[in-house]
Length: 263
Image 1 (cartoon, rainbow, N blue to C red):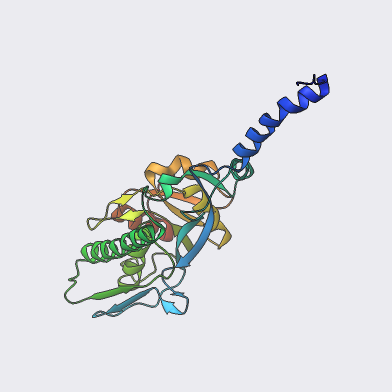
Image 2 (cartoon, rainbow, N blue to C red):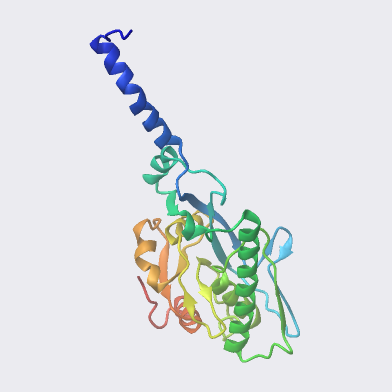
């Protein structure tokens, strides 16, 4: 026997599936990662008590100023991100919602992703050493460079590693420092020929740089627009496409002679 429902009861019954759908949408995992400004590290100094750059086979200079590589921190590759999480982060300047596959290779386990990031960091360090020694016309058979940076993966520190090696070996080429005593931060991949590549997450990295005292930020030229979008006040952007261009820009900035490119 079927009983007739009153109108309020009918509305309530019909609303149940809608509420269930909304609840499911709010808490169901989505293919996104959430990112925020991460740690920075001065490649001219120590990281967790160990020098980031160690040089043998050639005298290393005492340097002033800082060259800070920058990072972003993202939710883990197996973290479930819900619609509620996305809404919470979407309108915050210190958060970014990124496609999961843009942060982590698809179809890989957590262990495989960690191994991939470690391999990318090693390749970046090798390329940075080769690029720096090529720039200075030094032989890797005579000069040995060791790079150590704990708990960081990926290739985006390549440019800063390279500049750090050059600063420790040759400075600005005229007895001074590449930094001019400033705290300079940046990001960008590097290859053995000195070409600088884009990396992503630059808007968050500029925030990390400003937080840790930087006044200048080296950014791959292709990412100028992204970097300018949420640029912290008092942080100067210098776009770069090559190692030679980055060194020239820093030298011009330090000496006050010549033009310094801007985004």
